[in-house]
Image 1 (cartoon, rainbow, N blue to C red):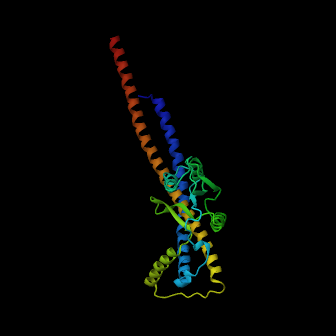
Image 2 (image 1 turned 90 degrees about the vertical axis):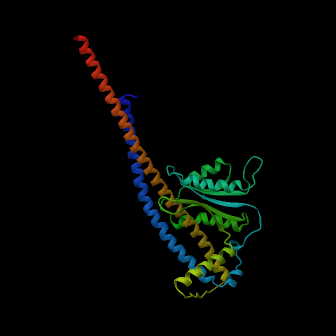
Image 3 (image 1 turned 120 degrees about the vertical axis):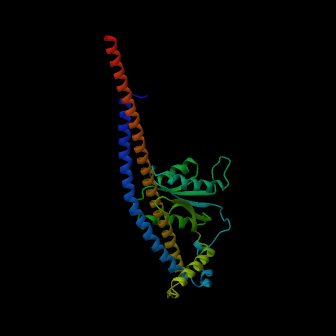
Amino acid sequence: MAGTKEIKRRIKSVKNTKKITKAMELVAASKMKRAVASTLASRLYAEYSWEILTSIARSLDGVEELNHPLFNEREKNTGKILLILITSNRGLCGAYNAQVIKQAILLLKKQPASAAGKNLNIEVITIGRKGDVAMHRLGVNVVASFTELSDHISLSEIIPISKLAIDEYSALKYDKVLVAYTDFISALTQRANIKQIIPVTKADLKELIEEKSAEVRLQQNQKINYLIEGDMNTLILSLAEKITRMQIYQMLLESNASEQSSRMVAMKNASDASGEMIDDLTLVFNKARQSNITREISEISAGMASVS
């Protein structure tokens, strides 16, 4: 059994660790509250924007006449895929990074690789240092890396990312653009997901229109008619780019809320484990001290017996 001094030193060390994890838990809880509020508020805005889109595109004949690269599916023009991978810059957030990176790796395994094991069909834009390190370690071609985004991200910070994705796709460099991110379900539940944002397929748009139309009919049996001035394709071009930007922004908000929730839960678990370890070490310390006291009493009794 370790000596009492060593046990006291270990108890002090664990107590200091608990103070740090508790402070990190409180900071993460504060950030999570703001991140979740932003995510939920943005969800409402995204829902209204989709309702406007479905009202404008209510006529399916008008959808069929759309002629824009973001709406045109390609039959393996280049065979390449652009993946936007959203992770965190820091660790200590449980399985948050591992789950979304695992989804990206599963996608990579589905694509053919070269003799050296390097994937030739997928190129990656990384958001966050953890994903950037993981992709470089796997030998994936990282075309751009964004690691300086603020904790409270704004829509203007998304413009370089969305513009890069749209420009590269419009230049026929990729057949589709995917985003690997984490959906925020609750403080205890987050789900890693991969979603295609470009092209916006007409089949998906029709399905969305039908779903949203059914919801609108259930909620309010009325139709909103918009007067469109100017060229229809020009309007859809602007709308498609803004919706793509909004989708990436929403995914970043979802991922940020998931990161802070995972970090808060991880730090809470670490604090609870530290408390349990302190209790166990305290029990060991008391047993060691009692053993020392008993031994000293036995030595004193033996000494008195030998004298008498």
